[in-house]
Length: 173
Image 1 (cartoon, one colour):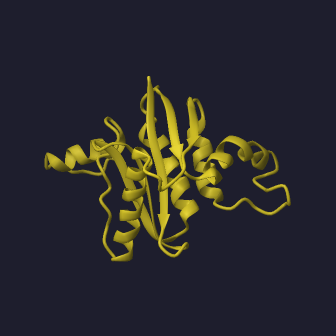
Image 2 (tube, one colour):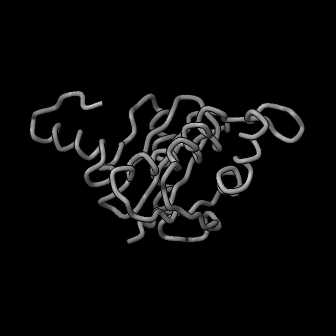
Image 3 (cartoon, rainbow, N blue to C red):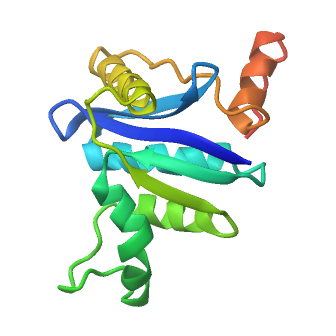
């Protein structure tokens, strides 16, 4: 089976209040963000969190992104960067290194593929991820916490939310 999801990031001011989100459907999605980050950081974090949320299952993962930077980073550039000690061809350090290293660790043993989708043209999954990422960025701009979403069934966030809903909230991670 294949899980199909969109992943997106948003930054107000770039850098500025920023959000990320991944979206499968209205019952399976997650979002978060920071007070100060870039759009690329949001895009990368969305992909990272999607890999983490689905780590407990053995399905293929089809990730739709409107960020060619993310797709190229993961599918084309990362092997060369790693071989050069996480440096680009010009010798400069790779930007967003920690997020990229975390994604690299999550890729081990996973079956995945990326598809580029044009943003802001009505693609249903991409628009849903974008709305949630933007909502997270806007929440941080207001000084509020964003709606984190339900997460993926059986994943850490879903288990935490179930415990909170039953009144048995405890730290699971």
